[in-house]
Structure formats: structure tokens, C-alpha cells
Image (cartoon, rainbow, N blue to C red; front, side):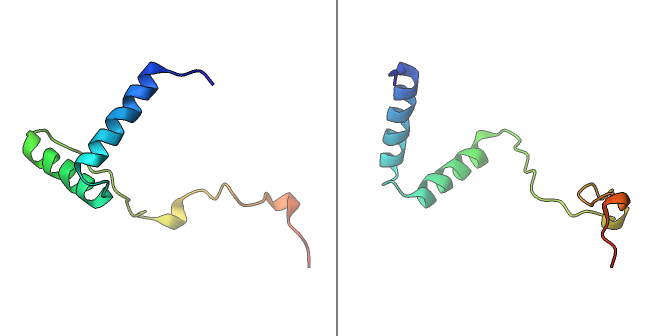
Length: 71
């Protein structure tokens, strides 16, 4: 495998950053959230959305009627 200096730099930065927070994912995420809050930028949360009328959606995963089984 070829050693890529850019990949190595990213890995080194990631290790240094994680070590700064004691390799604790919760502390790392909290620091990132704090950075978002204090940055002054607008962040978009594209969380899950509820479907308004689920029955109106096409059912593409169903078998076509000609392939249905008869009892």
C-alpha cells in the first residue's frame, strides 16, 4: 500500500485532537457543539421528518399484480 502524506497528516491531526480531549468522544462532541454556538455561523439541522400522508406515497417495493400468488 502506498503511503499518502495527506492521509498521514489527517490521521496525525485526528490523534492529536482526540488526545486533547482525553480520547473521550463525549468531550470531543461537546467541544464541537460549543464551537458551533460561539462561531456566529448559522447551522442547519436536517433531522428526521415525519411523512404527512403515508398512504398517498407510491409503493414501489410491492410486486406487480401479474406476479401475485393465488390461493
